[in-house]
Amino acid sequence: MAELHQTPTSLCCCRKSLPVSGARCVGDSGRPSASPGPGSPRCPLVDVASASNFRCFQLQHFHLDLRLNFAVKEMSGWLVLDLVPIQPGVHTLVLDSHPSLLIHSIDSKVPGLGLEEPVSLTYRVDPFTDYGSSLNISLPAAAVKPGRLIQITVRYTTTDGPAIWWLDSELTCGQSRPLVFTQGHSVCNRSFFPCFDTPAVKSTYTATVRVPDGVTVLMSASRSSYSKQDRVFEFSMEFPVPSYLVALVAGDLQHVDVGPRSRVWAEPCLLSCAVKKLGGSVERWLGVAEELFGPYLWGRCDIVFLPPSFPIVAMENPCLTFIIASILESSEFLLIDVIHEIAHGWFGNAVTNATWEEMWLSEGLATYAQRRITTEAYGRHTASTASTASTSTATEAQVVMFPLLICR
Image 1 (cartoon, rainbow, N blue to C red):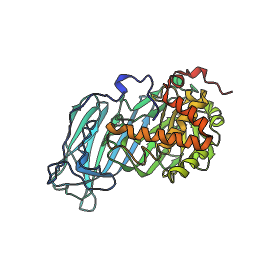
Image 2: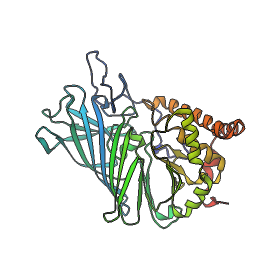
Image 3: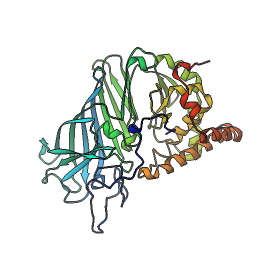
Image 4: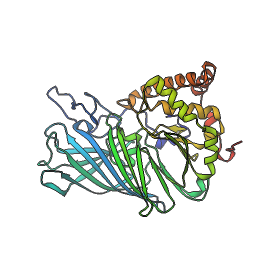
């Protein structure tokens, strides 16, 4: 992730200490415990930024089914969580949520045990500091046993939460169609969907997104498909990711292939400029990174350029990096930031900090990897120049005004 710029305080990650909240799972040692495996955090672990009881469950998979309504700036649909309780005596599921999420109903079912008919669940929403709220769901005692899969379905509607940015057409480059994007880092995606909003928990996910005619949807997913007749996009992320790396953008977007596993996406008026600036460099940088750090795990390495309302310079969403279009004005900063986000494919996305107190590990190692890649690709002089630029304030890249973006 590149440095924040002019982000409203209400959307930033609060830096103050928070009390530990949410139910804990306690083993014989009296400390939080969890079994190893995909979706399970290390033990013991406390994440003060999460209200959830993520230590009590293994999240195996989740599915989003959403309909985008640009007229009223809402997403509506449902979330399905595939959960396995880790310990006995867990009768409440606590998810991170946000006051901007309108919860309509919650139900559960237990596949394969004659409990496949949905059972309506009771729930309550409690405040949780400036980060959002906690969604406390009462689970049926007969259905909740350690090691047994239980599916939870939450039907909800998003409103004006900090993760979702709806742009009217006049705020986009082409000024012809509206656009929406999400930005989950660090703890904002709880206003996108209820979740274990902590980097300690990873899972695979799938998504179905219904949109108006003429809208293209992209997500941080390894596979995608589109039904033109139904105007439905389907996505699948086959590699486990934490909640903050689930990202979506929808609008008037087109693409050009710039390599065997890379595409550049942008609004039509920006696309030729973006392709001209990047060319075949993405595949070159990926190849150098693989020589240094091993195979690239994520399959796709696409890049989408977003309007200047994007609240940070760049975001390393797996398979689909988000970058602010203003940075096209500076070839130097473009090189730095794209290589940095590629480096996150190894450091941050594949290997992730357990809590946000350890974010320096992700960013520090990605910066180290960025400089190694730059050195191998361009030599020490260029790497030294890029190093100086990347450690200085990013003001130059951040204040480039969108109307001045000219591709020469």
